[in-house]
Every structure is written in structure tokens, then in C-alpha cells.
Image (cartoon, rainbow, N blue to C red):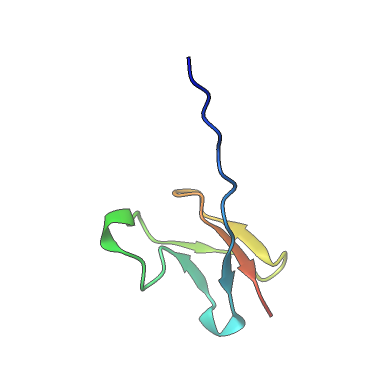
Amino acid sequence: MTETATQPTRAIKVHRDELPLACPRRHDTLWSMHPRVFLPIEKTGEATCPYCGARYVLED
């Protein structure tokens, strides 16, 4: 039996000029595409994609 360690998800930094925030973003690679979803990040400064788990942090 082997143990697997999960790596913490690195936050993707987003700036206000990139809002509204959608995942996947325009420059993401095609292999990782899922339905586009808009994420509310303005109030808390953080958002997580319900499809892929990508974690976003508002920088400014």
C-alpha cells in the first residue's frame, strides 16, 4: 500500500483589468477545457472553479 501526498493548489493571481473572471481563461490550453464558468471574486478576493478546482486570488 502506498501513500499519496496531495499538493496544495497554487493560487492564480488575477488583476482587476482581467474581470469579469471566467474559468477557463482565454489563454488556457485546450486539453484542460471545461464549460466556461464566471467566478465571483470581487467581494472576497478569492474564488475556486467548481469544475477544475483552480484557485484564483485578486491581486489589486
